[in-house]
Image (cartoon, rainbow, N blue to C red):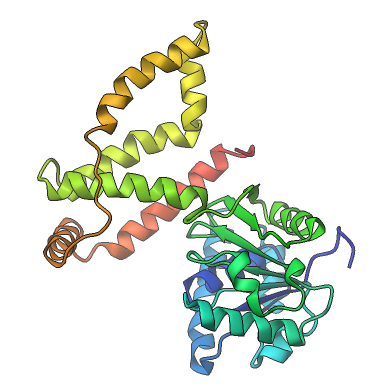
Length: 315
């Protein structure tokens, strides 16, 4: 395989993440083989992938001939051996259970090519833990995108302590060819970067709703039309640089901190929700969007497609 060749992709797991990876690679005309231990899952997964790929085509995000090539090459692996035996890039998206994932990765390593690169899209575990049963841990790294994967361009690439640099470079190259922006993290941390930021924001959102400060629907409007719009244009530190203008950055930063430090004292410190809080939050969400999930999803995807069109340059 050369760097200019399209890698043969094997996706292990036909859940939400696996379907997202399949959608992205198929839409770019790559040959994708999808496998799930539950044999009856593939037909539903294939139908969803085709629908999502066609929507990308309809929105002008991928050319028709590329889509047709990808769909023609999209296949059911039927067994782990048949799925990964020729693959250049094996994407594992198994259940969030450490023991199961370690055993699955061990099985993958036993039947894949020596030169194959294995990435795990785990939200909970990192390569340092996932590689425990592997003979070639240098071929493994974690790659975590946001959903829906075909619209969200940033992908966090998290090497383990034993990951070979050339594997990181190859995965970065492939992600760029998929029109995504790989961001390599320098350390393994719980939640990675985007997950930690999202968790912090969501905790505040939960507090504001449960404390009766604002309704769920209005809070979503505030976030999506306020901070989210600003962050879509520039990152939080870029905003500070712009706000500083011609002033000394240390002085400008100190002024900002003078305000934010006061707010930090009032931020949520909760680390969990009790049963009553969970029930209240669930009812608030149900009341905010009764039967609107499909319409909200369609509008979200339309907006994401428009944002991608506006933001062609890497972050």
